[in-house]
Length: 134
Image (cartoon, rainbow, N blue to C red):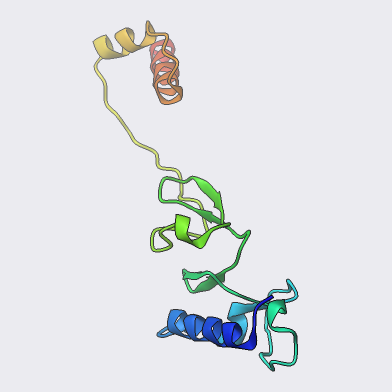
């Protein structure tokens, strides 16, 4: 059970987070688990208010939200201290396509390989396909 003083400290922390953004304080709290516009009238029990944990890409982050790391890994936010929110994103990174020019000898060599690495398998499959097309 948190006290009104705890709630006021949380409000101050959120005010510091949203400084310089277009967010309003009322968008950065949940009341009884409900996201969205929250009127901070202090009539509810202090423990029913849940502050956001961080601001990522101009949106508040709450517990159990899903964010993506710079490597594309998917993370469910549980503990705010386990993430560097400055590098997290709401969206997974877009896949990249890389064009590689290989000699015929290299293609033949790769096509003979039987590796377990997923990316290496993809390269081997591409090399085999290139040999079939010739």
